[in-house]
Image: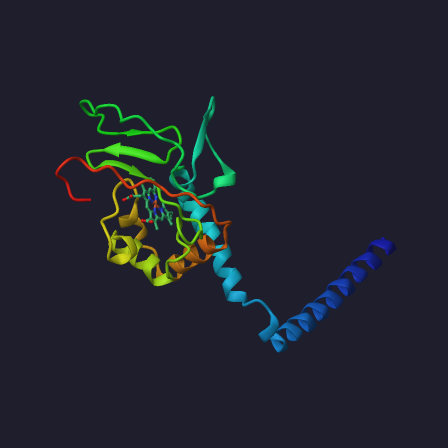
Length: 198
Ligand code: HEC
């Protein structure tokens, strides 16, 4: 019992010392703030990662391999979009209540809008979002147009749902997308039904 009491005391002492140390470290950081990586930045990246993984952007934007238990994401091509090398035959004809089809990669979709391929969201400057500004990303998610002014973004990209996210959440998603490894992968343009405007 005595020793139990002593160890409780020492735990409290350790906690107190740790508290002082944490306070001192905090004060040190606050003073040398200019040299530290901006804390909000990494907080935004973490929040963005949480949102991207929670919402499931990768279900469509990361190429998958079909296994016996279902599609498995190709982590080397995280969020890199439909692989440029994966040429596909024309989609099967839609019949009755079945209006579309999806490739096993989960990155190519067909429906009444034609065939759409999921975009490369990595920070590669030529083939991903590397050249996009934060504002262009926010505008895309709010208007359903590329960079807020380009062509209409086709289904099944759920931008109408994402347009409900706050600016801070969209900024966090963009910050996270900026932090992932760039992958060079030029996703093909969609195939739209004859006579339709993309
Ligand atoms: C159900 C599938 C699906 C999900 C989930 C999804 N997307 Fe998409 N996304 C697409 C498709 C398909 C396109 C391409 C449409 C086209 O070419 O018009 C696209 C296009 C985009 C574009 C436009 C890029 C460009 O170069 O034009 C951005 C940005 C984007 N998605 C971001 C996201 C983010 C961020 C998430 C998660 C918060 C997400 N998407 C979730 C299917 C999806």
